[in-house]
Figure 1 (spheres, rainbow, N blue to C red):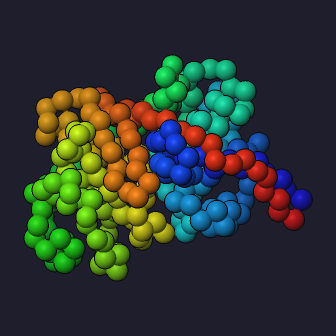
Figure 2: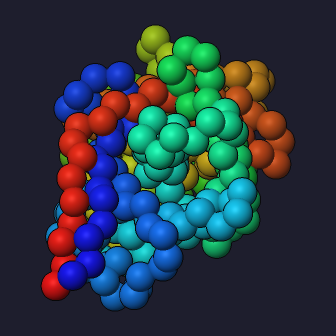
Length: 262
């Protein structure tokens, strides 16, 4: 029988039932990829993270209920929370290695955890009929990044009140970010990835790899505060560092347990 420890962590929040829940499964050695996907499907959270410590580096992988993805912010923050709080790790800096390279995570003195991720700078893109169906020509700007579209809307209220049609959003070849200037923070956003098994993600670190460069350029400032306006809400303190960005947030543990597989 295989026994694996599992943790469910709420990322980018300091309250239970807020932020973005991620499952974290520490491994001594990699298990079969099919089993990792089955565990992620059974957890039915937007992401389940698996990692293996290799000398001073943590190799990390992330799975939605349907596919493996190349980068995930909230499940990285959740994994770092587990390493700092449950695995007796004494260093204040963790280096993860993943498909997009190294990710450095830093433990702060104020209970925040800071993620250092690669920037994903979007470029203006041509508009197709799918965007017209989704937004009815009502946007300020549309940009295309490597794996995501960013659509700026006129106000925080438009982002908050946007009603997604996931069947139409599925027609886009990339994931979708909607965003606007915030009323009380620098910017707000929501994120949709129905083609990846996640209709709306509560708080999305990888989306902020696109959002932070966009708003840093638009607002002409490199330190920004953000809220992702899902029902659960997430709060991020961000910095633009040109080819990198930093996102800082808190996390709380909801449950610890054990997976048993015959």
